[in-house]
Image 1 (cartoon, rainbow, N blue to C red):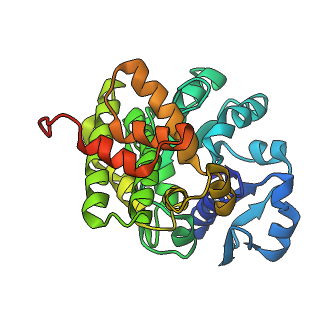
Image 2 (cartoon, rainbow, N blue to C red; image 1 turned 180 degrees about the vertical axis):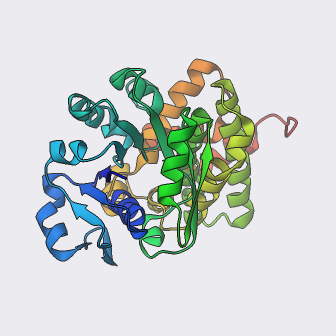
Length: 331
């Protein structure tokens, strides 16, 4: 098989490239100039994002974008959702007839309210096979080869299966999915709920509150998913419930840590600076709210996260507002 190319040498892009290469499959990793590709090639590690994790022999570093795209049929973009459109526009003229494009980006595009697969169709057109990789994964644990499972979703069943097979091996298992809408909604909403649980724990509200937020957050995720045409059972799987629980309960999650920092009294700007990486949930809170309002979907947790981050609402006032809502049926 021809090499597979991963575009983006951050923590998750590096971890994915390592996993693709672990079974001996030729893999190319491209990073921006600020990722210092020459140093990655020399050290055979990404000490900034995954310190101490060696690159497999089958993993090559390619500093030139055209060379990275041209060397493979299958591309996996591991960039923040806010950068996805720009990267797709960069690679579009470099694609060839056999090119297939996947991504590991999560979240709605803020300016348009579109999900990644909708952005990809708009930029690439209908002729390029597309897929998304999503699920409960921390890059550090994948890099350390700890047991992990994800979902690979695509309307092209053959593409999903080939990506899943190339990823699977050792301690890593990939499942295929056809419901790309559901998989992407799970990845978009879970970051907002993780901010809520982080803030709750930061306030010392305890385990009862955390589980309340996770459970009702899942209900909000499903409501939005159904309104957009997703299958509810998808949101009960790895890319929905699985990713939600992971992100809400472990401080490896940037979004959860961000919520804790805000609860500690830090400004949004201070909290983001403290994290030192993109906090997807901050932007997702605004985008999810816009989409929910457009569709008339009730998402009170996401709404209150938005109010805290963008309108300065106090967290104790959020609790009072949530608990004073009119009594209603759970389902």
